[in-house]
Amino acid sequence: MDIYLDHNATTPVRPEAAAAVAEALAQNGNASSVHRHGRLARRTIDDARESVAALVDAPAANLVFTSGGTEANNQALRGVPGALLVSAVEHDSVLGARDDANTVAVDGDGVLDLARLGEELARRDGPGLVSVMLANNETGVLQPGVEIAAIAHEHDWLVHCDAVQAAGKIEVSFRDLGVDLMSVSAHKLGGPQGVGALVVRDGLDLAPLMRGGGQERRRRAGTENRAGITGFGVAAAMARQGLDAMQGLASLRDEMEARILAAVPEAVLHGAGVERMPNTSCIGLPSKTAETQVIALDLAGVAVSAGSACSSGKVTPSHVLRAMGLDDNAAQNAIRVSLGWNSSAEDVDRFVDAWTAMANGSAKDESPRRSVA
Image (cartoon, rainbow, N blue to C red; front, side, top):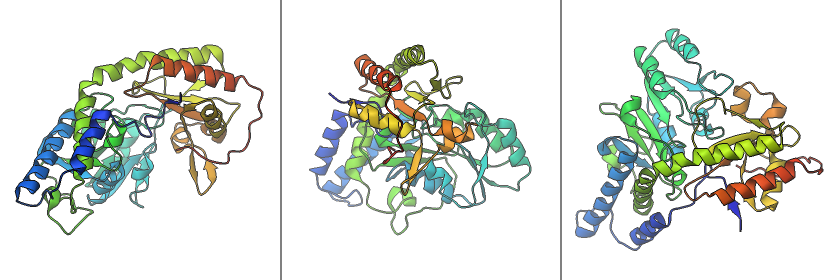
């Protein structure tokens, strides 16, 4: 049986969410229509909106459904005028959303340098937008969101939080963070791919990306993805109920890391010195590239991700690890292991056995011929 430990890339759809999607697909009706079929469609979307909003402690009326986390991030960053500051470890959908983005450094653990943020804001004319993720997708490192929002607001800047990796895995509160915008995604917490949401605080005039219709309170034109949104709502409700179980993954993750270090002392755990999500490990092995490790593990029936990115066949070091001060070699030798709602101790045992055998093996490291996202 294959072992899937790549939940930060996408987590398996929860059966209840899949059933809800199928049921919604079997129903007629456009949520903008006033007849009973349309009213039923509207009710299912509104119910899902309540469920997703409850997961991140936000008012349901402030939530805009999108096609995913990437669109939500783009709508936030491109819908607010003025300058843009982002952390150096952001997801590509943030780093690439605008050509005029300026980056703020992180420390060796991948945590935003708050003093540097304050300095950057002080020397720039406002207003503008600061965008910092809540949890890093490669290392799981958590950012001090409350402090970031406070510093930005002192300088009259708005704050966007990419909570795609955090929502459904840890407690997330839009209200407590004090941010102005927040992105979430269904497929990171057991919902279907192709649906996400952006939370917009009261009073914020956000320019829409999609124009030409009155859907989503005129903030995102286009007929809503009723089936995907319905599945998102069910998955959000289940993720909220399962937050304690997700926290319990931390002990499983910590045991896994301890066994890895005992078996292969030269292994490196990136970001392990600070607060992380309970499900994520970023493991470096100096003697083998990430691609070689991923391929070897795949052959052993274990799915994990490379910590490096690939564009047009050219392998490049992880920008996250480079921002944390690692050299190119170290930044190309890390894999990400991410547990999820259906992970078990047996899954971890299989991974540790396969990874240890690979790490201690005598096979030569070869140039990678494919990448794993």
